[in-house]
Image 1 (spheres, rainbow, N blue to C red):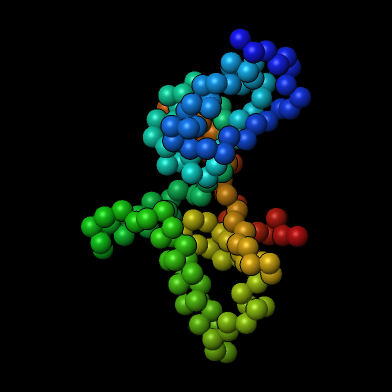
Image 2 (image 1 turned 180 degrees about the vertical axis):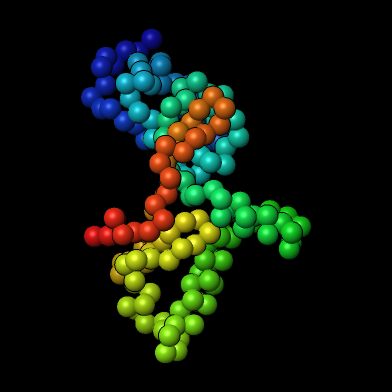
Length: 167
């Protein structure tokens, strides 16, 4: 057994999903990484992994994710309309279209200006609130979930606005 002793960190990001995540998490004890002392952090895609709590090393790990209520309603509406589940990225297209519709109905006429698009208050979408930044990156306010034996539980719900988060 390889022992590295007390690790010089208190959190470890596991940027994997699926079988590779299960393989890496199972190896943590081999390298003397004690999960209660080292918080495991994961990816947004972890919410798609079934039976995540079946891997003992992942119990207690945290990952970010979208608020689930509106997303589940979107999936149900999509299935009803198209007879299948939407691709994971379908919500981005939906939110972009909804944003265009909202800005198109602005008081005084359509406003697709940079100042309207870069509104620091953000816009409410299927996967929660988002805002666009000048650098072209979209910012989202996610929930934080914890892996449990029975699935996941919300540690922190997604904020409904950027007000306390605004820079």
